[in-house]
Length: 591
Image: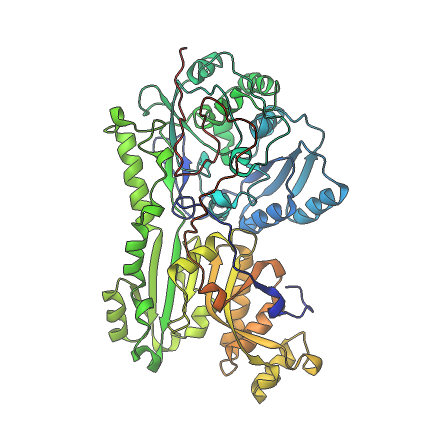
């Protein structure tokens, strides 16, 4: 929040959202990492950023606003550790001058922006990606992140949750995909295709016509371009990165010659919706020359609480103490299992190859990742309380009495949580929210821009201030008492953060205020922290009563809007299809 702006809690309380990741597509779905070196990949936080890289962001745009996406992504990136950031917008629509100005303002002072207008609307996002590589082959950045303008709009696929976690971590890898690794048969072909927005929601492109590739099927097309499958994959298969959200190092992008990309761009320029586009989408890991299949990496959430001093010996809320055990049952839910199109489907690991190491590894990694994506940390200064928490499955951290302060820990997580993509403080009180509500806020509220979500209840107004609090507020607040005397103040029952510079700044400000003013109640230090927050977009407020109604995952209504036109006679795999909807992803045709 900009200095001088008065926080208005009543107008900032968010309504319960109904849109979000489909079951199986939220935190429980991993992204993928790949390397050219046999030694494997590093997923250490900022391991790539430690080398001061240049980062390019390539956006394939058509009809979605971009300023919010750019702002959110730049907030997530560790900008002090990056040499330069350049945003390349390739727009195939007709953006208005206001939208162009908003794009420029969203990156001002943090990145350079280059906007290409008037590109022919051909080849979908794959054409944009290939076009960028061809035009910049000799000057590619250390890391290039390729995105579509639908990253925030397609909340049902959970793209933003994984994208922002990757951006904040920025690992030293040669390839990243926003979805799990998937194997595709070289016999893959599509006789026809209907876009997901068309068959699911009835929002169809002006031209849903379909162009067949030549040569085909997929394997013949790769051979035609001189691309060979990577080793360590089952015979007749390659890995694919579905969805059009991925990243690659310069080394990976230049593993294939520029002439190969140029030939592919020429093919993708022939039409808007064409089979070659689906071949291209499935070609990236192979083009990158990876030495081994890409591996899944799960987003990690650290949930913590604290009990200090005399309050540590009281009877704590049973539901919160039982949270780790409840999570074990939660993560084994059928709703969080690997979507069928990624395993035990004809697109990967069919029965004839179920014993193959790659297939077995995919299932093993997925199950282990879901089980380990949550960790529970309990801070206390009482050994007896620590033992009680550990019996319930918490990881206990015993602090000296002088360092154990619930209010300080709420304001800023301890060092034990520094490696997590998301953190959540939950109060040891009757007004604590559930695990499902916590994950809902992570995948809904924090995937749409804000870095911090405060689950709050009202705690009176400024007129309730004691003398010390009145003096504190007068010296620190940008809002005087006067007409604002009865303005409602807030107390946080839960604080949920996404790893970002904005979240760190807010937490640091709030903690410094709390530590320096131990006799001032939380609602006053939080009020000032909200006023001093550098960015209003960094913090969102969720009403406690509304939060208690949230669940995760959100199971959508079964009804699907279908286009009025007759459905294609041959089923085809739609990009981003519902994980519980099986379709043939590898229709075999004769070479």
